[in-house]
Length: 483
Ligand SMILES: CC(C)=CCC/C(C)=C/CC/C(C)=C/COP(=O)(O)OP(=O)(O)O
Ligand SMILES: [Zn+2]
Image (cartoon, rainbow, N blue to C red; front, side):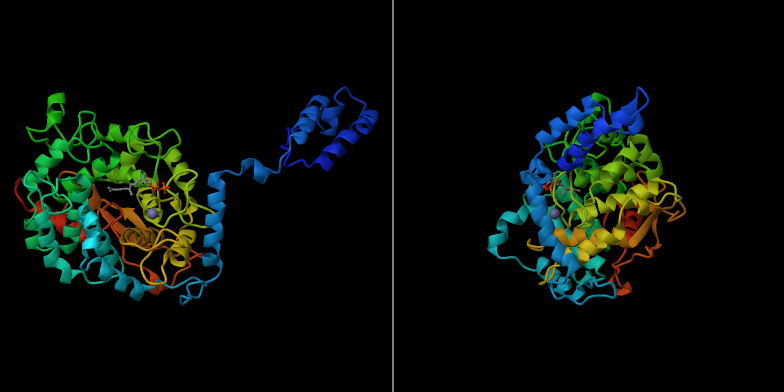
């Protein structure tokens, strides 16, 4: 039996010397031809190898220290005090973890949805996103968004483009990301005036122009084709109950495509990378935000237990997703060798809700990811002293990180379940799968680290707005004729 070569780091020189020194003695005692094997020691050839490695020995930290590892270490050192102590002086719960600072966040969110000075003009194209992040954060905290209803309808009626879809604001070209954020905001606001402000027919034509011959969608005319486009398009088609057939003027019809869903599952499938993650477009590096878009898209295309398994290598994806949880931080990074960041609490954490629905209830993903470590990261390291949530200690809070830290907290605190028996009265038509989700109670393991008062509201795991907003919106548009 040959012993495996140990690395120099595992076999310090003194130990190597002992092995080398002992060889003769073992040889004297041995009475077989295989004395090295008998004694469980290295053969002379292996010993020479070990000695060679030892002579090359450099302390392991130095060998593997890179710019990336240095910044990772620095990040860890910046985060650990927030996990172990309480530098923000927040009130702690019985588990020694900061309470959810609801009032501070509510104050911050009021500013997010308030007026902006002229210095913010360059962010005008992101207005639908800012509104969406602000509103979604408020609903997650259980705050009333009704007072904003009229402003929301007005803001987006101006941002709607005459040729369909939404831009960042009045006069801006339509874009699927703006359209996605605008529609989710309007679904949250609800109300006939808001719903009726949406021109479904021009929207249908706009999305038709985004459909590509290979099955995917571009983000805007002449723009990039990526998995955000596929997800945003399906969100819009499904929420507005748009016809699935491509408009006659859709360029993809020239390639023989007739439906928005033609070739889509296969296109998403091609975005799964060699390591199991999902990338923006075939052949690119996998990223957590794109993984969520891919899973979201497939969960609209059909029941996740069917579509995820049909188009993805689920075990490989599961491995990739679980590798995103950073230790000891507990939060997620977005891609291999990158840093933990609070927004991935949703982009990656939210993937588990969808993935869990695709596997048998006997193998819950609780064993694959650590909900409580994620919740601890969000509560201890993600909350800012002045309100709002953020990427990590040392960074500024903003609406984006507030929204996605809170959505991630919801993924950690609840089990989301796909159940065909939910809402049997809606969702029977085109892309109706996302109307059959429910919450199977909160997570109640032994390792919970949050107080019951710090449990946030449920969030629809595909649309990332309240369940009620999703169901009311689709119900409204199901009552419509084709247009
Ligand atoms: C629905 C929709 C439109 C979703 C958008 C999803 C989204 C947030 C995409 C960003 C993806 C990306 C490659 C980030 C990398 O940023 P980075 O290099 O700064 O961050 P990293 O170091 O953490 O990877
Ligand atoms: Zn982030």
